[in-house]
Image 1 (tube, one colour):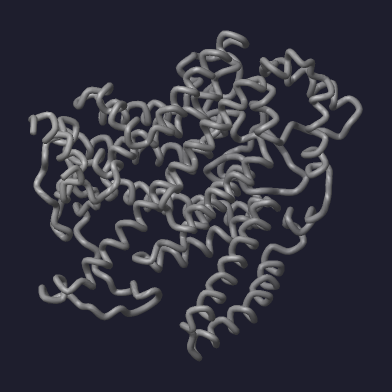
Image 2 (image 1 turned 30 degrees about the vertical axis):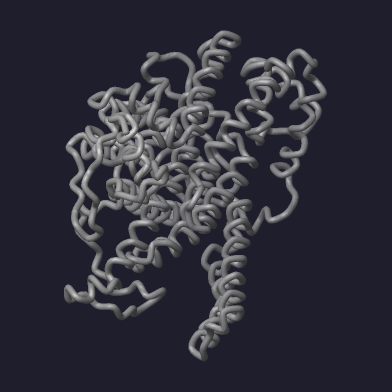
Length: 507
């Protein structure tokens, strides 16, 4: 057997996914060298390069969740307004995400990193290449203004995912927990704003102060609908935070109350539907497995009685001034979602095939406003189709769907529910077709929550294993889902294990 054949066989000896193999020591992994097996329970030290890249990524997410485009407009930055320095057209978090990616890949040769990632997650590389091609096409057709949103809204999720795939799961969990803490802080600010009928940061639309007939909180993320979609998405992930039960309970309560303050009917109905479906599934599974008892049945009955009482208390707290209470019917905003499809009556076949760009969209929108109640095109898919043209739009849909399915593969049901909530919310507004960080935060929620769940499962497996018991650990589970009282491993513990020897399949 030749040396190259031996190296090829050694590379196939994995018990973990290629993704975890990528996040290990690159000096060994990229050169296909065999590494000693990793023993669960022992620390797998992260390299300084990964630590620095993880810290910069964490800083980028903090900036993304605290510095909105409204705040930038308020301080005089031209991020969403015409004019100004070209460097102002990128969000500060965008620079940090690019920096984190460079910190991660430059020391190990970016070409080899991308090549290894293409073998592990080809959908991610294909999507990134597709977005780069779309940016070039839109810049050629409509100028830089017609492609600016692609970098901010559609390219950044791919760059962030490519960076997080190179980080150990412990860093992804850390980023996720910090994001959850900031989401809770944002929800608390929204509730206080609603109670005081005043905003922390002025509300701007197209660079001009905005006043609404029905007050809605804007908090740190700026637009009420953006707050609602991001918070509703993260609300679904609270169910997997079993090692931080206090954080999950307080956070889910704050986020639920804040959804009423932000006044999004779609988010409110979606979260109620997802919560009801989850409760029904849990009850049916308990009956199917005959895993029910008198305390459990009593708890379910109390929840069923408490739900209408809680709804009544929320109505008393928020009163008739809530936008959801006042507009929970078919109004002008809902009508605009249907009127948006009339734009295709004013597009030629050639324009539909190759796109009309932002100026063309504004022209048609101004025409429709003259004789309809259309306020804006609140449908990202229509806007993307008009921007890209049908051929490029189909390319985008295929690449985007493949990437999203790749990210969701193997994640808990709660993470898939979070992605579903976000996609429904994104389909009811224009967040994917303007400068927005919603899709980037979806990547954080999916990859971060998935990493948290995998770390928790392995910590539990180690905690309750015979080996842990022989070392003095406890094999008794207590508390909700058997997870309360678990001592987590060290913060330096990572579940990105190195390749473990397996039998030679070619033998």
